[in-house]
Length: 225
Image (cartoon, rainbow, N blue to C red; front, side):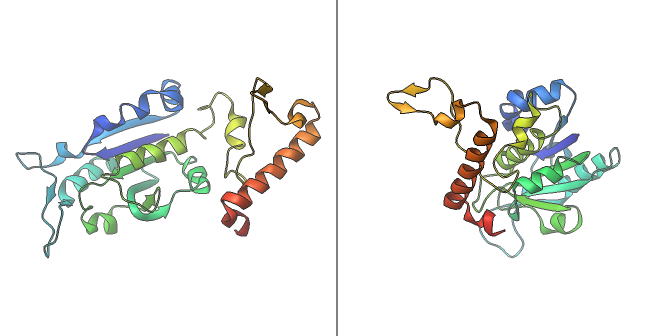
């Protein structure tokens, strides 16, 4: 998979993309992540990519020209399955959406900033808008990093134990059950005996019951769906 991220702050991705699963996936050649600085595609001598909004009002707006120029440059070289804009009012990111995106070959992720991007970018260039929650961030970079991590970790070969991803919360519309490890008894707090029983049938039954119980408590809408 190839992911091209369009941003005015490419250095913000150094940390998230230099560790753990994403780092290993890059080293294995499972994914290629390219960071593109939108400022490199403006004709403004000060490398500005924002301007005052038509009609007045607070804040600045990302201009259409540098973004369009960059996207058209990338599309001339690569065929993209999706051009995604990280937006507070986009489709809410969930595991089913992440699963679907993990099957794509190439995608662009556009990180907005300031008050947002010129609406014409959304109307004519963007094919999908995604939000990671009903709140506003200073820019789309953190959201893009979250989306990338969510997608990459479930691509076959990215994780050392692929079965681990399949048992994550939300994969089967349930919250994952509690997990325990050694020591069995810590300060009088004991791990459930069933998990040490060796009885796979009873262990799976316990885990399923706990998943349903936790889902009812914390994400009841999943059971409604």
